[in-house]
Length: 253
Figure (tube, rainbow, N blue to C red):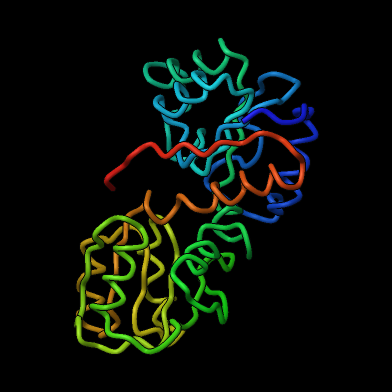
């Protein structure tokens, strides 16, 4: 996994520019969240900066952890106590920097979660929608039933999705937005989509799907957000020659 040595600030500047981080209004700070070693030799990538992910980074002697879900969310208690202290203490004790990119990593046209979902599922992107254009819409390779599309998603993502809607409806256009984007249902409907895919579904969204006829596929928050940070790590290795390893900490949600 080891590659060339990179300065922490050089890595920060590259990531911020590549993901156009300054453009986004977000629920957390994007970029360098915890400052560790000034020299980066190894990077571990993953979806969420959980305790398990931190321990994986320590085990691999990483100098930086790069994730989609970092820390310091606007709605959270800002005090560093309890599990927050434990996470922080482990990072600082091992001089590991934490980099996190939330909406920038959803929206990137090539490396983002939604772009990578399209690439893996064989969908052609036609446009963008929703807040800061993080949602995508497009078409499958050929019109297909809702049930068949759900089977394809299950096989590709390795997780059985929850389907709300008519399984026999023919899907000609799809809208999708990874993670917890169920609130964008009406935005997805406005694209003319026959089906909206996101990671999670809320109680009220079930009724909207039934009443509008647009099917909803909840394919898993974690499952739909693995591929952006994975692609970003591969991009770092290719562009900067730095060693990156993706670690998938299982999450059933």
